[in-house]
Amino acid sequence: MKCTDNEDARVKLGYTEREWARMLEQERQEKIRNRRLGAALALLLLLAVSMGFLVYYMVFRSHDYTLTYAYSSTDAVYGLGTILEELDTEEGYASDLCVLTEDVNTPAASLDAYSAALFDINEQEVLYAKDVFTKRSPASITKVMTALVTLKYGNLDDQVTVTSTALDIEEGSSVADLKVGDVLSLRQLLYGMMVVSGNDAAMVIAEHVAGSVDAFVELMNEEAAALGATGTHFTNPHGLTDSDHYTTVYDIYLIFNAAMQYDTFMDIINRENYYAEYTDADGNAVAVTWDSTNQYFTGQATAPDGVIVYGGKTGTTNDAGACLALLAKDLYGNPYLAIILHSESKETLYPEMNSLLELIEN
Image (cartoon, rainbow, N blue to C red; front, top):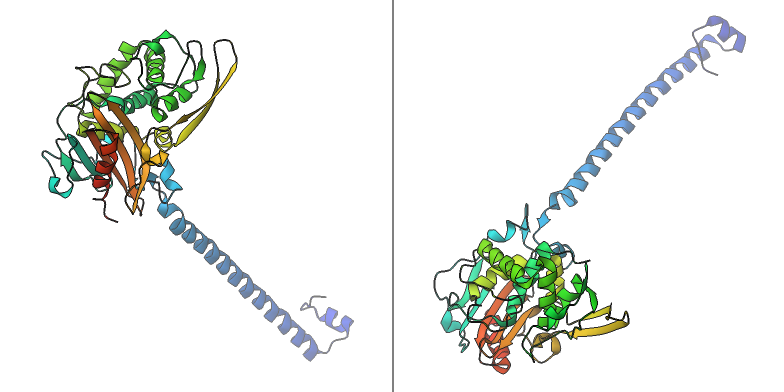
């Protein structure tokens, strides 16, 4: 029972004055202790909340940067790791680019290829450059621009019926083996064009995205101009030889750099193969695996020690020779773009590419 100052209560409970005074003092001291304990608990709670917020901010919020490439947030090796405060697909590739006006470091690698370059993407530095502004036939490296236009203007979930337009290509050129009446998604066509370098897929993509191949090529040239690729002109979406179809090593760098802003493009160039299921003209199921044309993926070529090949795009015609645009990384995940136009053959292309890749310091 709580003590009170009521004398009657003291008498009624049978306490002496000294006992009653002692009990009142104990009650007063208990109230003081309870108030002090409450204040201490409130202070500890305030400190805990403050520390929690500080830990959250320092560990999480202070690291909330927007990554240049979405996949870099989870992949320490393959992620590009370039960090920007903001990135817009339209504007991101127009800044922080490698700039040069002449050949760079050509004694460092002895290449017979007509044109070549090695770009350090993070440092915006050119490590090697040979005739990078000379207009040359790019062969199927053209498809990097086709992919860029498709990713920008197309809906990859569209179902596309293959028309006879797919057959309007040189006999014997690389194909995804599409048949008139086949029904595939635009996404599948994009992988078929890039992974196995299907010229038939490129034609179907162009017709579907822009309404006609000619209209699509106009888009390709418009995008090239917007990127500052002034040494480039396209006449088709696949890269088969045409005297008015050309680009430069430096323009390929600009185009490839723009395409890298798309996660789908990064997935495509990293594929050793791609499995697709679709239907033919009669509604029957078709299953196919398209294998990469990149010899680093087929095991026919091996990159130098300390260099990891991420992927890229090959191209070969009699006029263009053997060509390759390749994204590679050092052991710290730093990205480099190596480009060769017109090596004599596939047999010389990959040793020459390795000569470029050996310039990457780890």
